[in-house]
Length: 450
Image 1: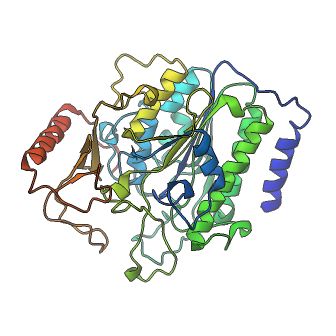
Image 2: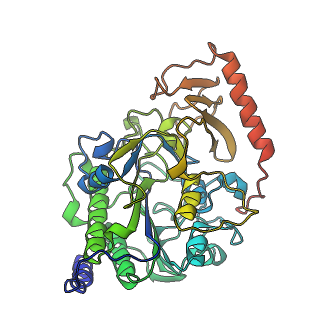
Image 3: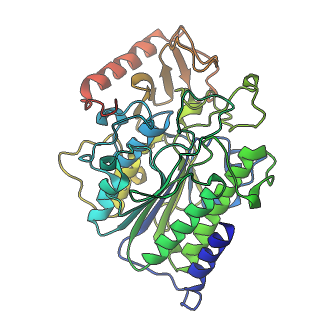
């Protein structure tokens, strides 16, 4: 597999070695959105990690924009991806829980998506990686605006039987698809990142003379973790660090290919994560380290900041540049209207979005963001204030439950350590009223999953 991967890269890069390396300018910018799976806020060196080395991601941040207060709409996979694709809170489209192999539903094919927007503007579109918005044929990426799909239908731990256990090892039925056809089963996971990278570069090479949109939702660092031999043992953070460093290398290969094709200055590249890291307590007996959300509190599956605030970096010549650190609170719903403005796409008049154009946000305007835990509204951020409603149930034995409402001022308490609910009852009341108004105004579709 490594030989196939390297040959693929050599052939693609060599094919343009005789080309004049002047910047190719198409009428519209290319867009690549890379979505890591369960990557923690503190897992990149440009976000503070001192044991995971990510030079290519750091380099993207150094010349682009690094966001410090960027949010997923949900601390779990499927709803967070639905928000990115639609520009709407996932509950609007009836999506709360994640989709499992036994689920019968998915993102409604009638729902307008980012890929359909690009396709209508003449873009070639491809989804490479983990889809996780429904695996029945009618929900596949090909029915949501993507010309091509290469990847997994859902998470790499979702082979039956359930329930999941900390020492879980996948069975042998996980399949790799090209469009709706299985091409590899069981999929060999140690080379998945390599195969995705080769596929992405081939897609770019094939469409180098036309605008393209590449949505690249990586399988990793969602667990179980796998890494190719070239990166095994290379980090200072165990297998998890090795996996993240291979993702960084993958980005590096992509950037080299863009430069070789003369597309680097006409391509917007975004790197983010669907939610926070899993961050399992060591008392579960796991030997491998998991991701870090430091300095944030909480983890994936919780609406503490560690579950919903994600590393996000964007670079695009003339669009996202300057090596800036941007602290304006933003959310995944913002990407669709942002890209629509960039490519001059007239959004449907009856389309109600929950996001705004990132490039024209008013830093002095306070925005309200709403976060669901599965299908229940559980938290709100309004300006610097964050209210998290009482959460009495436990989450796989981890003490994330709390019997009382929690109020934090994130401006001076990013780690959510001081509960101000008793000191600020009027603020709690105000934020609860905002949450109630939001729920009343939203008209969610009935859930499609069973």
